[in-house]
Length: 121
Image 1 (cartoon, rainbow, N blue to C red):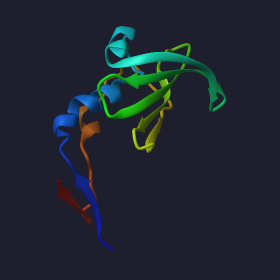
Image 2: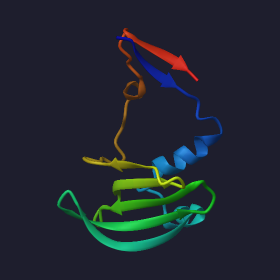
Image 3: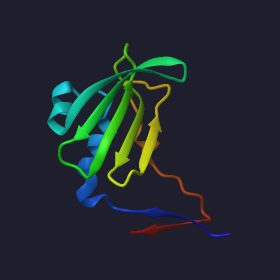
């Protein structure tokens, strides 16, 4: 029963990944408008809490759209849906978000069990 993980370099997609990872956590409206056409869609309930929904249409990406559900008090993302031009999407849900806390470098060390093989791509 072989277990494995794939490790890949982000290469030319690093800037795109960083842009999406930062969505909903401290980007100014100017930063958003630089990369997206932004529309406020309305309010929805996420896990019983009110959230303001933003629709982001990327200006320079193969991504079709991004929907971002924002906590109206803290103005941080509680959910993010990224839809590709193919219609495939990924959905991220955030809970217990803590802003501006110290994170030790060890939190980013990937601890892979000994019976898992790493394949570099």
